[in-house]
Length: 123
Length: 123
DNA sequence: GGAGCATATTCCCGTCAAGAAATATTACCT
DNA sequence: AGGTAATATTTCTTGACGGGAATATGCTCC
Image 1 (cartoon, each protein chain N blue to C red):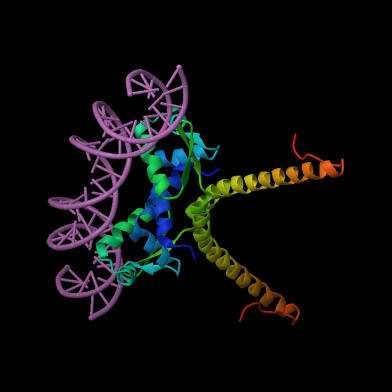
Image 2 (spheres, rainbow over the protein chains, first blue to last red):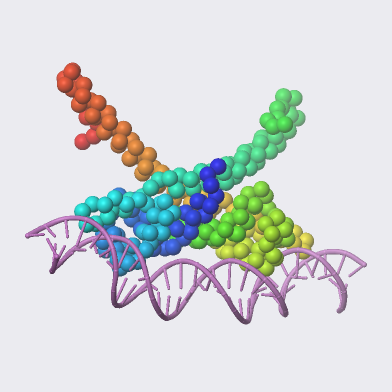
């Protein structure tokens, strides 16, 4: 299980609309601070500050290129998020499965009257 | 593509540690307000307020049971979140694939000197 | 219908974070 | 080294949010 605090930090970082837009924009590839600001109509200090938060959350990393810095996405936090999410999706799928088995059981009981040949899945 | 604002709303709702804890707790099944407060050491008004936010984000729903109300998780927002996430994971897997093909290409160029028999993948 | 429990809402306060403008830092070029 | 472009940081203000206490609503049972 990945550390929970990191997931919350990811949520916090992505809860801000402008940071979310930055991340979405960076999905197209690493970009400079100026390019981000121009594309998203944000002034430069805002972009730098948001990138700072994203960097502290591990969502982006920097690569110096001449006098500008390219920010690009880092997969790790969203992979952790995915791992966290999976626990929930699994539980729901499981519950669906239980529902299925209940349905199956009902069907089995139906056919049981016709043919004495039913099986149960779980113990 | 699910609506983006909903994903941000999900992030916002889960960015608060106590709301996050509530959601984690509810993964074990629907619980009453009092049970949540007792389990997580939160006083009742806080729990109600956090549940309100979670409900407005669609993360929980309520079922009245006698004089108490049972709050349970709703799968939809986290499924949407999963769909959003998949775009990112796909891109990264894709890039890994490209990296693989680059490596393959380099290998091919290596063998090209030995045997004149190399192939390229992409046009 | 009143008593009592479970939950929801309101009010107030402290804190924190985002936005804007100005300034500081860094790196490249000549 | 000075000039300039790109980025980072600071300061300030303001609005939003969480926590606590008190109060309001709703439901059940007698």
